[in-house]
Image (cartoon, rainbow, N blue to C red):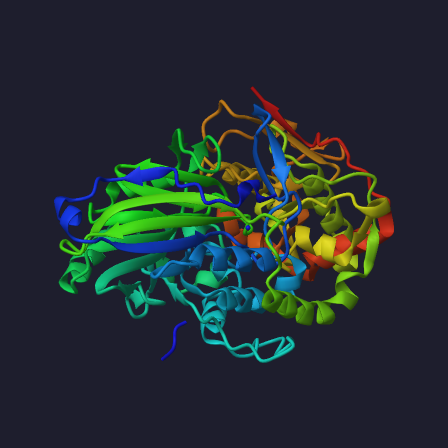
Length: 555
């Protein structure tokens, strides 16, 4: 079966070199291989708002925003980086789709799969967002065919990815086997190079439980190390890992004076046979040396392309040296005509819906949280969900909560503050349905305590108007929310009283670890979250940013 980025930035800066050439390479010509890599594209077929932030060339203590990204510019850059190179391969570290802008999301990300296939993407790891619509939909992305519910909506039949998804650590519990191939071997001038693809071990905790039912996500390092003997038995010594997990670096996009985060420990646990690691997930850019291995990441949304140049020793058949650099997908690159034609074909179908007026804003509504974890846009989205479900017929909600990971983009101020459906959709791209549930005051507190299940990455829920609470970061897990500071319209939340609460269906099913919500009573399904926000804009425009003061952080 089939399986399923101003010319000042134009030059590739090669900044990290790992490992001296072996003695044999001094006598025998090494084989040059160029790997081009991206990660966390998230369906950004057009340049994302804000581009990429880089150090200000005039003042290194400041940063500036540089326009970057877009499939049309990226395709041209990819062609330029391939030019004159005998051995090249274009790879990715996952989250190519999911949480996508309107142009891609309206067609279940089929346009993104087609655009990347046209660019010559060859191999990609599976990211957590590849499971947003479930494993069956991921396989459709690989194999093609019409969407099971919405059918064939695009300008032509969807044929599936021409690249190969790899998922070494994603195991189908029924069979005990990976849902997709664990690795792929490519041969360059007779020397095999293995590419292993895997997603983060914590995937099940950050996607909808229904989307990963029947799957388990194994330890990243253990998975890779177990494959090394098998690869060596097949004559492979050069190993590249494509992993959807990453780090938090210091320095600029081509530096790594310091890095923390999960990728550090994972790489240190890898068998020494692993030569290069292409990472992602944290939406950061870096070129690092971790435990003697080259580790790269290309920011997010297609703003960068990583160039990795390997020299393969023809005697040892291993990597003799590796160096890498990130190149900005600048708007100075001409637009690839084939990409332009593809996007225009989809634009023609989306334009009537995308351009539909939603309302207006007085200034940008930011999703960036304050110190307590609350954001301007998060408040507005929670208010919209409360408004959509407060009527008795619609659920009778008195409080609404929404997950910060579901708020994907600012709603930016443009011409006269106008906001379209596409703008609203960009901030709420998952099309989750609203669910109104009955929770006791005790359950509400228990749910809020689950915001710190991962102390290194708390998930502070955004809350609707009228509800407020305080939390103390010095308290132990399970006791951070002050029970006497939880209030609804000025009245303290009664632990024994029942309240109608609205969340999205992702949270309702226990997503992001909010398992208390699976114990709630009397669920009532409502409209889609994006439609609730659209209706809210129509009823309340112009909308001005408020002061986020519903969540108070103590100490």
